[in-house]
Image (tube, rainbow, N blue to C red; front, side, top):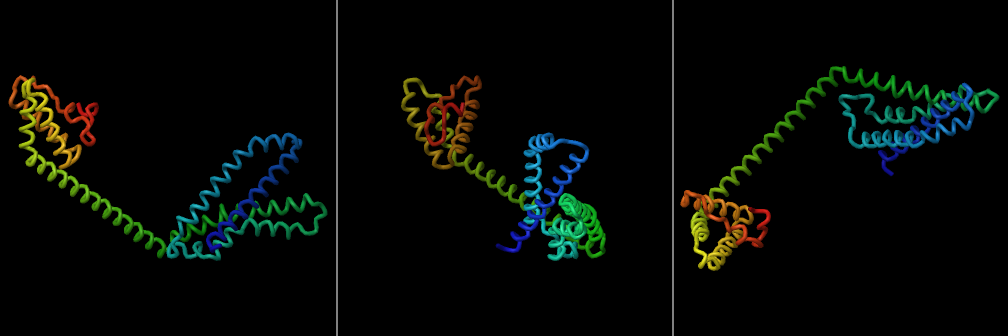
Length: 270
């Protein structure tokens, strides 16, 4: 087990001890105001799932935080040290120990347990809610910490801008390549488009032969550039037909002729 996993285990044990102490104090407070045990058990039974979800979310956040958000030593000269992290993690256990020492000499077990629980709660609250945020705030306002933070954020902003510029350049290159490909297709497919436009205007007696030639043209377009090339060729042929026939009465047989060639489907291209 590596050092990081050991600290995770220690933090889990401390958190479990803290939750146990908190639960004991709550039960003790309910008993002191006159609640019967069966009411306490009923309340705890209904809230068990909710408490379990809260603990799970808390532990998930802690474990992910230990993995991902490591403190920068320059900006956090104290709280990033292993000694401070160790003290932070074991503070609930130390609080319980302090409560035990402070309760030595009491005659009742319940008083000893109350002292341990209160020591755990007070120490954890003091360390996690008061001391740690205060120390972190002091670290943030130190001149060296502020300077490093400004430089780090500026560096991160520069990297982000550089990445965005690279993405823009890549997108521009892709668009330029697509435009070149489109121009190349326009030039290479123009004779085929002329032939295809002529086949659309063929007589009914030559319809079967026109279909065979159209299939050959479509297959050639598929081999050149796939479905996009076929669509471009069809658009060019239809445009030529409209230029030739001002009345726009030309019937588009191309989707039916090319049905089944590569990815071309008659139901999708109409």
